Each structure stands twice: as structure tokens, then as C-alpha cells.
Amino acid sequence: MIWCIPTLKAERTHLRPFTPADAPEVELLAGAPEVSDTMLGMPHPYPPGAAAPWIANHAERAADGGEFHWAIVRKADGRLLGAIRLTITTRHARDDLGYWLGISYWNQGYTSEAARCVIAFGFDELRLHRVQAGCMTRNPASARVMEKAGMRFEGIARGYLKKHDHFEDIATYARLRTDPSLLRKDEARELMRGVTE
Ligand SMILES: CC(C)(COP(=O)(O)OP(=O)(O)OC[C@H]1O[C@@H](n2cnc3c(N)ncnc32)[C@H](O)[C@@H]1OP(=O)(O)O)[C@@H](O)C(=O)NCCC(=O)NCCS
Image 1 (tube, rainbow, N blue to C red):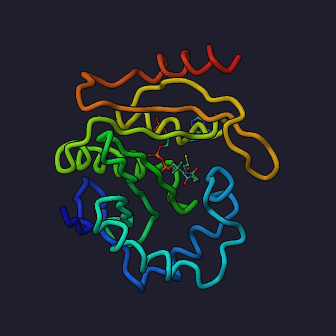
Image 2: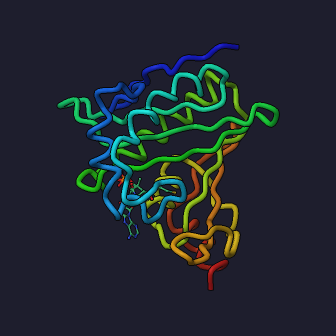
Image 3: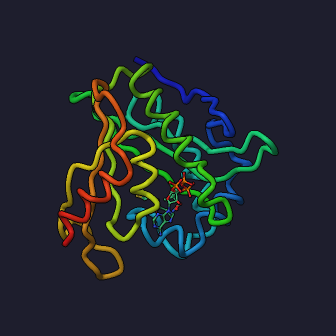
């Protein structure tokens, strides 16, 4: 099946394909050390000129159904806020979710809204069975995004990734199409505390 990246409409944001004109803003937003610090694949300093080929690659990645990247754009003023992606493993009807947002837009609920939107796309349009994501345990904002998107805490892989010469513990969250309801915030915190202590 051939896929293109659809525009998805959430309450306060649109998720749309990136365009070449977004490249300078991507470099500015993703270039902040605070953004790259808790991401594995984000280089820092962000290499000048790297956003354009990254964006140019998106259509091809989506065409075979393998990966969907969206620009998170604020409806009110059209500002580019950040990015969200789904990476599909077709054989297992599963996808991995990833996201980042420019610092000045943090803690306003934008990523949680975007995550709920792409998860719905994954279940409804791509007919996926499982959506999963992981975050460093020192990244509670990302853990909270996953909780607010209805994903359940599944456990911690200790020393799973190496970043800046440190091994990072990774908390894994997932949601199945068949999951009935969200895990309460205090329940998830309790579970996570139980594993890390
Ligand atoms: C993770 C990230 C995308 C979150 O984006 P965001 O738009 O700020 O997320 P939201 O506003 O939707 O939700 C953030 C939640 O985390 C909470 N939070 C933020 N910092 C926190 C902290 N230090 N401790 C506990 N909770 C925290 C917020 O209060 C909010 O929860 P609430 O709505 O229940 O109050 C953003 O911080 C980011 O881009 N970080 C750098 C890149 C990154 O880490 N990407 C994810 C890799 S796994």
C-alpha cells in the first residue's frame, strides 16, 4: 500500500507534513541543548543545513508505510512548535512514537494532544495493534505525555541506551487497540517509583 502523510486536525494544533520552508525553524527549535538532551537521535549542535535533507526524506519514508513525520503547528497562528513521528513495524502491527517540541512551547499540553491524535491515526487508519514509546527515566515530561495519551507504563530497561557517555534507564509505555482506559497519573507514578527504587 502506498501512503502519503495526511494532515491531522487536533483541538489546538494541526499535524501536517513538513515543507522545505520549515527547515530554518526546525534547526532553531531542535538546536536547543535542552531538546537534544533527552533524545537519542538528535545531534547537538544541530548541524547547519541538516534539516532540509531530513525533511526531504519524509515522503519516501511514508510511501512504503514505514515512517510518518508530522510538523506540530499551532492552529491559532500557524507557528511550527515541534515534531512527532510514528515508525511502523508492519509485521507486528506495531509502531514506535517519538516527539520533540521547541522549549518555549513546553508544558502547554501540545505534545499530549499531538500524541493522542497520531495514536488515533495509527489505530483507526493504519489498523495497528500496539503503539509503544520509551523515555529516559530522567524525562518525566515525556512519561507524562505518554500517560496522557493513554499509554501504560510497562517497565524499565536499565542502562538500555548510552547518551553523553552515560547509560540511561528507559521507561517503556504502550497502548493496545483493545486497552479499555487510561492509567491514572498517581497509579503510573507509583508503578514507576516501584521499579526505580
Ligand atoms: C517531552 C516533551 C516533548 C513534552 O512536550 P510538552 O508539549 O511540554 O508536553 P505536554 O505539555 O503535553 O505535557 C507535559 C507534562 O509533563 C509535566 N511535566 C513537565 N515537566 C515535569 C517534571 N519535571 N516533572 C514532572 N512532570 C513534568 C507537565 O506538567 C505536563 O503534565 P500535566 O499536563 O499533567 O501538568 C518536551 O519536553 C520536549 O520536547 N523535550 C525534549 C525532547 C524529548 O525529550 N522528547 C521525548 C523523547 S522520549
